[in-house]
Amino acid sequence: MAFSSAGGYANLPNGNWAPAIYSQKVLKFFRTASVVEDITNTDYAGEIENFGDTVKIIKEPTITVSSYTRGSVLSPQDLQDDQLTLVVDQGNAFAFKVDDIEERQSHVNWESLATSSGAYALKNEFDTNVIAAMVSGAGTTVGSDGSGQDVGFASGEVDPVNILANHARRLNSNDVPEENRWFLAPPQFWEQAGQTSSKLMDASVTGDGASPLRNGRIHAGKIQGFSCYMTNNFAASSTSNYYKVLSGHMSAVATASHIAKTEVVRDPDSFADIVRGLHVFGRKVIRSKGLLVEHILID
Image (tube, rainbow, N blue to C red):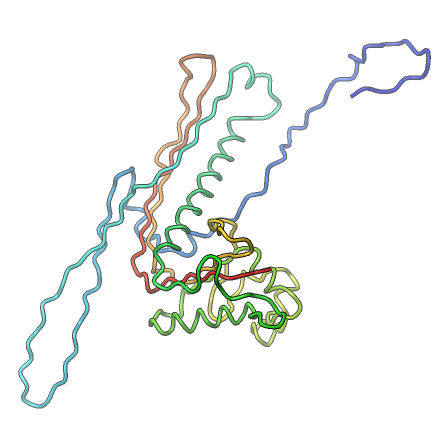
């Protein structure tokens, strides 16, 4: 930093007496909250270690019920042992290099800092990948990209709470259990839900002692029986102002995730360390009727 001097003042004219001071505290970027591990079945995560691993999931057999009268002869049915296969066929990785001289002279630990950033990036890509698979594998789709209900409070628009109520009714029609239901939506949806005209402003609707909007936790409590989450990791719609919301049951999707490797190797071409990380995972929709995606307009 250059300091101004009075006219004619010539003492220490080059400014080398004033060293640059670098803070050891680093300004980190904002991190998107990860939601996938909260809304999917992760029971099989401990059974995988490497890319290509498979987990066989036995399906519950369907039992046929027939009418019975006194003295009737029952013919036992054969049980089916159908199975689903969860394959660890997805992977993401990062790699960066820290020069020995840069590491020695630096005022921060770049290796540790960048590794933390890389781990977050892997988690974020995991969320984006799994959410896309859930959207494409949903058993029920309401509307389409460019055609859906207008959410808001003007004439002809639908209250966001009514969207959740409709999702609850559709899942009820598919006999989806009420426990462990979730609802996932982008910030645009929760902005509408948080406006003063929304029923969420009424504590008698949410069942809370006070409106949850007073502390900004719209998506932290249960609404219409859903645990509600916000994410920025929906794939963008091709039509302006259209967004997707997704609801379902925790058992509808199975995920298995594993950090396969984090390693430091010497760069053969320079005096530097290369830090690499590999994240492998699998995801599979195992109960499509437990997933519902809706395209909505928010303007």
